[in-house]
Length: 307
Image (cartoon, rainbow, N blue to C red; front, side):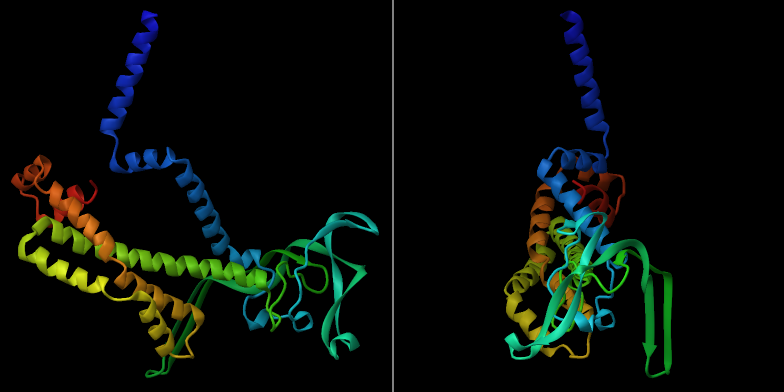
């Protein structure tokens, strides 16, 4: 029994030493891993990021008008099968389709399925070309136009031996909804990350300066913060969407709106940082850093904000 308690005491001592000697990053990582909900959300977010980044590889067709299927407009989803009334197949397949006018629909176009025509899935097929690094420069004043592409590929995860496959169906113009969904995931992640990054940086700078210096600097920054909190975001976004040029792409519009979201979304976090720094700036470790000659920016960046 004494050996057990001695072993338990040694273990507790070791855990305490690891806790008090751990870095800020190690403490954050340990707390994150102890929260099951956070871990699940982290894995889901990681999966979405990977899906969006490799969206072109996972997409059988281009999400733009270049990848439209004129013979399958407003088509239903095509789910791969392994068996039907004709028997079992070790290779997944879909049925061939035909677009024709029907008397039953007043001679409108309808899509009929030919259950005798099996179209088998193939993996790592050649398709439309995509690039992971695509930079464009276009200066009208100097008549300069350049297009730089790197990491260009044509290989896609899957396709069919003939015709097309649309897992989520197609829209009214024949564009593949599955490919457009993967593109939308990447666009949404980019825009969201941009807005959060801008708001986070502004909140750190404004909240840190306001909380550390206090006085008239704090008063001025808090007046600016209160003014920003009075701006209604929804009418502002509606006005921006109405005044943006129509020739801009959807990605450009999303990036502008996300940047605007970041520019008006920092006040809440800035106030929390300010409150924390107001209570921490009188602590002994801050006084020790000041006596050692550390600058204000160094104290805010290396001591107050990480706490």
